[in-house]
Length: 399
Image (cartoon, rainbow, N blue to C red; front, side, top):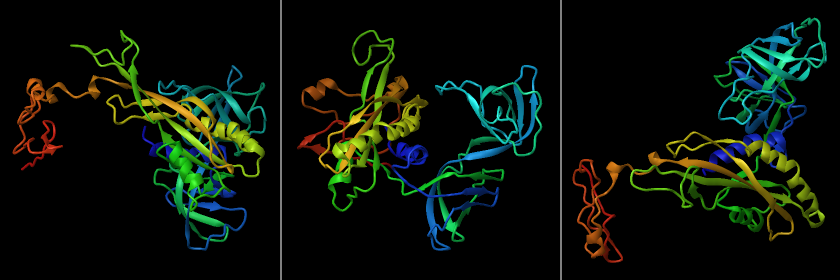
């Protein structure tokens, strides 16, 4: 399991659900101007020298999509038209467990039966959808303040290099793909994200608690670790209990039981027997981990069947510790992936190996693939290992 994408994903998504692993950066609003710049406005002085740049991560915000029309249908449902394309869908996606939007978040209507999360009944087009109000509505009069609230555009979510332009504002260039202008209120913006990757939980623990140069028990940290051993098991339809049914003329049918582990460290020097830290790990942090990694689609580009594989929650619990000032907790996820014939070496790349000669102690002078032309001046002989010729190793040069 590749860890870098998971670390980057966690850095963007975890702060949306908890501030335990980052420092909130108070922001009143973000003004987005297409083809120009975005302006971050803080409620008080941000403390950055004017002209200096800092890195800020925008995690989440409600993006307003103006509603231009709303009509009550014969069924009592309401047909809504938006100014820009919305992101709602009722079309099933086989890669998702929840294949469609269940609700739409509306605001600004004079009737509270339409404001808030309302049941999404139908999506008619990129700019029209039908919702079910909380109670019967006869007529709707728009005032211009009605909006569909959507998640901030993907191009704006994540890290930005922002320049301080005044004591309370910072700016950064609007991404080219953002084609509309709007203002979002009270977005979630953070700094100093403490989400890292590590070889395994033990390495993470040593880095956090036993390296005196880095040990700072005043803040929490999260580490993403790969599965220590990735096993292959027989896929469904196999005829035996072996890891695979492989014989002459048969397909290779195996499944990788891969996964990863989330390890968190929570300072607990002032907590009796880690109780407060345990409650945090079992509550707020558990919620953030689930909503960030449970069901996450993972691309496996190294496999021929490299489509999306969902990560599923497996287990969690407190880990052993050697530092009484820090409580550690682990969350384990699994993600299965299929291995097929296409992942195996192709028959025309099989090598001609003289098994009898090798058993007799006489390695073949050259080992070439079957069915492909020889490489010019390619020589597999000449390398010794422990003083003996090795039939499958060699120095070579090409011209």
